[in-house]
Image (cartoon, rainbow, N blue to C red; front, side, top):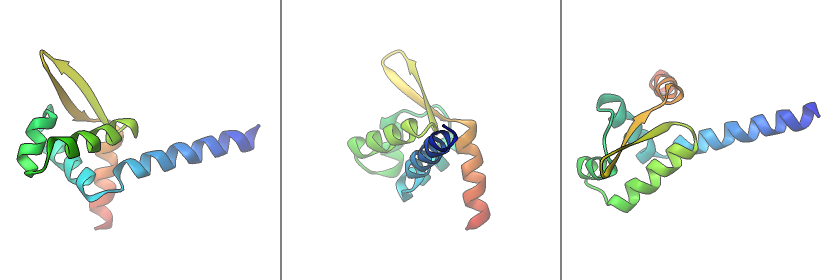
Length: 95
């Protein structure tokens, strides 16, 4: 049973690492660190890339447990989780 638990933990870690293993997703995390509560549209405008691309990246970040979503009227606001803030610190340390 212990081996199965360890395997699950390693898979969860892999999912999280894959969640930020992309230059655009790291860039989005950096933007949300500086300006939390942005919508996908605001992020897309800021980066000058398509809404669809940003929406996919934000979705992957959310699946990895790195971004939280909050509904506000007709828009959805995004902010980093504590885990994402820690990962950004780690990434800055290894630059």
